[in-house]
Length: 140
Image 1 (spheres, one colour):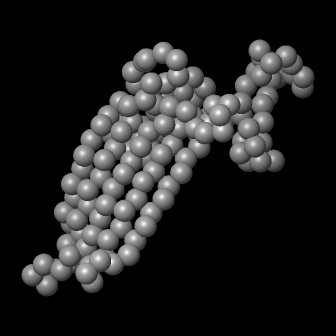
Image 2: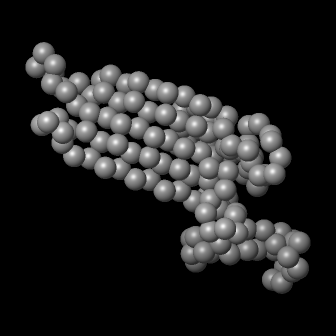
Image 3: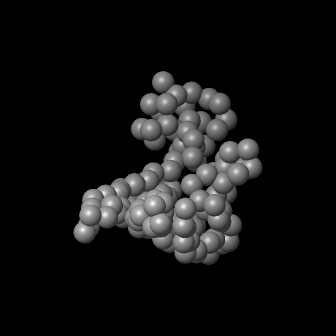
């Protein structure tokens, strides 16, 4: 039941009562929404993939997440000297405006969950945490 309450955006009274006015209501959980897409195929007999991801606060009345962060990337595998080499280029942007005010360090922080969008102190979703723009090149 709790899971259904979270994904349907149900509210609870912060004072613990059954009924309360809207000023004492709070969403259950940190309402985040995201979208991931990936396309993979071959081009001139070489495999490749392109992908994108965005996640943001699901608090907007416009039916789309607000304060979104982005990730875009492309990868391929090439055969070099009898070895498979994975080449990946990725752009990450976790610098968001966090609503009306322009504050820093707000993407992974949350007023209800002081540890933010982390697990055991480590950032979930991006290596770079808050307010980062990065281009990453991977050769594996």
